[in-house]
Length: 420
Image (cartoon, rainbow, N blue to C red; front, side, top):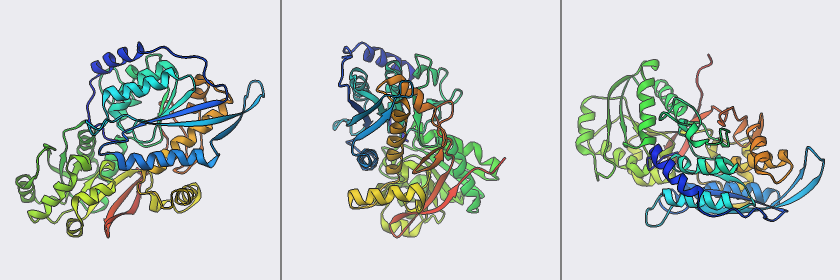
């Protein structure tokens, strides 16, 4: 999910060094209590999406009455742990988004609390860069329902020392239950081809998330026979983009692709496309796949121009069978309404796999839980049957395409790479 703020590696090292010396760890704890922390922006522009993520997390714990029965595979000892959930905010009201300082504080709170056995987060990939080294040294399993930056887990995708700079102990402790941006970018191009697109103009918000996906889209267009007419970064602080859209209209693209988010002016771009008389659709990534995008663009705009959005996995309206349907039904029963955002599924999935790791470990031990989590294979969850690979990435490679119909996103099709 979006970075919002780019965090250079030198800053990560400096801030983590400060974080590691802050506070002493109480090693006593409560023998029969396991605490699971989430760290997400609970205030600011992402609040709508993180509300449903935390609802999904709490649903997984509610399903088992906040009690977890385990058997130690080594000794055969049976125990019942009480689960405690801490919903931490890595944003501040002043910033309106996550901050480095708050994410460090959350990671250190988890590190120094002997009852904390897992950390669900983060939402922003830039925040993950900050907390990953702290939690790695503490041996805490970290699982994200939203981080999509490839460089968090795979060498050669980002700066020179990624991802090893986030693994100071040399072991993997970070995993995610959502596909990465490199897959999303290519599947966006594949979908565009299938929609009949021959010529595309690419925009991005000049941020790491949006620029990264836009770069993948640009690189993959030749593979699918699509001509790139141009690629430009916008100033997301600008109030309108009429001159830009007038210039793009003259090139007659079949599609405008925007690598960015609702918060970096996706809705305004669509409005200005309509304003200058453009007739081609616009496509964006999961950072635009939210009700806030529909509200920003406005009903009249969306009735005049199609808007397509991609998302990792299947949206709520496509979860019509199996574990996915069970999740939607249970969520609706508990919260008296179906999930308002597809990220609810990933919050639930992250919590489910964390509980599975604790069961497999059979004891309250950070390293045993980390090892058990990364060994998960063929897990049957709400997003399908999947495994963690050696990097901590999910093997679930299905994404989805949705478009806006009658003021709401409606599932259009599943997106998968062609078989090799």
